[in-house]
Length: 298
Image 1 (tube, rainbow, N blue to C red):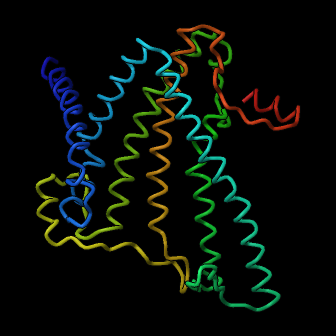
Image 2 (tube, rainbow, N blue to C red; image 1 turned 90 degrees about the vertical axis):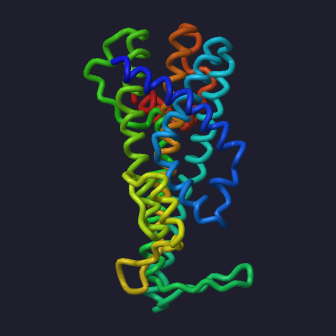
């Protein structure tokens, strides 16, 4: 028990040191002309060191925020504004997806066109219609991955109210905070680890895994080469499937930020009383009474 506690304390303190070191020595992990810097970035992006660096910063933010609550409110407002902005922007991918699909149908069925060339800036980009058809999956993935945090902020996810709907306001806040720390964050952390190394295994060779040590990866750096995934599932089909792996990582990062903001919002609303409920919340205005009432229920 004592050994575990000491391990936690030491790693948390080292998290602050590692953060300071990384910020003061950016070339060691951001200078991608150096193969060892790439390997360090790939390793530490899914490492225990990164977890404790973030954990230590969260502890510092929580302590400072409890002493000066406007700091926590500032984090909540910034995190929610970021999630809302990204979500509202990439929600337009749905319209783009519909327009592109309509264009493909007209060109293929009516005009018998087999490829599309785009060159607004002098550099012509030519791909077959099958490539553009498969690319529609990317728009759908953008909506799912980059609008998920936005939907969470707006309260659009389905909630199972077997107990939650009948308890007091204080209990609801506690349930939300406990659910965030015990379920949401752990699942996202595990997903991040899998998604991070899943991404890098499709970007470079030799392939890396979560079990590799930093020393092993630095040795592999001697033969490191970029090997970005460009295969497609059909002849002349969409060949940018590495972008889907990047979207998974972006999804997890955005949801982790919102999980932290959600925890702080509930904590602040619990501490400051009912007058703090919904403070600074940038809710969408639907312009329809029935739709507004439905959103309030969810």
